[in-house]
Image 1 (cartoon, rainbow, N blue to C red):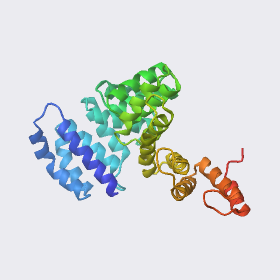
Image 2 (image 1 turned 135 degrees about the vertical axis):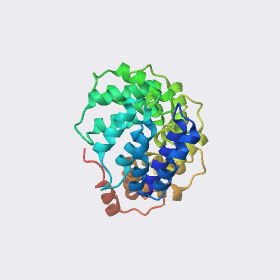
Image 3 (image 1 turned 180 degrees about the vertical axis):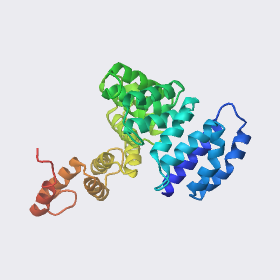
Image 4 (image 1 turned 90 degrees about the horizontal axis):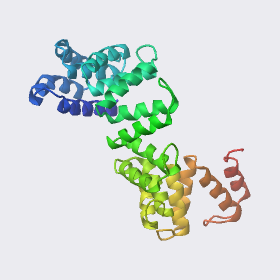
Length: 309
C-alpha cells in the first residue's frame, strides 16, 4: 500500500509540472490540499478536493481523480469511475489519461474489454510522444490484439518508444536486433539499446550486456565488464545473471576464481529456478567438485529438480 501511494504521488507531481497551458504555481496551489491528503493516504479527502476542480473541466484534476479511483484500496477503488474520469481527461488531450484509459480498456477493468478502442487511445497518446503508450501499441501489433498483426508496425512503434525513453522498448528492440527478428541483425545496435535500458535499471538489459561483453559481440570483448554487468543484474535478483556470475567465479573469467562464491551463486540461482545451476550442482555432487564431497543422494535430489524433457 505504501509503495503504491508513493508511485501515485510521483505521478501526481510529474503530471502537475507537465500540464500545458496553465501556470504551474496556480495548478499546484489548487491541488496542494489533494496532494496533502494523498500523502496521508486519505483518498476520500483527495477526491473531495479534486471534484470541484474537475467540474471546471480541468484535465489535470480529471486525470488525478481517475488515478485515485484506479489506485486506491477498496472500498474507494472504482475502475468504472476511473475509466470515466480518464475518458474526460483523454478527450482533453491528456497523454497520461489516454494511456491509462487504454490500459483499463485492454484489461477489461471497469467495463467490457475493448482492445480496438485501447489501441486507438494508445495511438493517440503515442502521437503525443508518451513512451509507455508507444510500447504498448507496439506489443499490440506484435500479438494482433485489437489491431491486425504486423511485425513491421511493431518494430516501427518500438523504435519510437525506444527513442522516447521506454526502457522496456529499448530492451525488447535490442533483442530483436540481436536475433534479427523483424529487423536486420545488428549486434552493435542491440548493444547500444541494451545499454540505454540498463542505464535506466532494466535488469534483463544488464544481463544481456554481460553476455555481449563476454563474447565480444557488438562491443569489444571485455571479461571484467561482463562480470560487472552480471554482478549488477545478479544483485537485482536475476537468476540467469547469478548463474553466469557463478561461472565467472568458478573459472576465473574477469575475476579472481573463488569456489566458495561460485557455489553460493549456483545455489542462489538454483533456488530461483535456473536450470543450468541446478544441473551444475547435480554434477558437482556426483563428481565431488566445487569443494563438495561426492554424494549420490544429493546429486539425485538436484537431478529430480531438472525438467523431465
